[in-house]
Amino acid sequence: MSGQMFHDYEFVKTLIEKTSTKQGLHVIVRIHLQEYPTGVKTHKSEVDERRIQRHATIPELNYRIAA
Image (tube, rainbow, N blue to C red; front, side, top):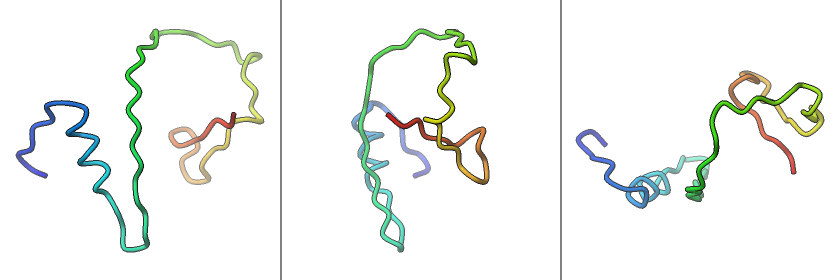
């Protein structure tokens, strides 16, 4: 990929979708361009920890929030 210019979202999406592994991983990409405000603070009492599924190795960086 060296020398590739990322000129638009569709180009990057196409490159990411080509990702796969020998074990059978295939990547599905969805682009969501909605803008969200930055700096929004949430009090700990507002967070439902039961919905957060943290990764065993790096929980502070890799987690899912269940619906």
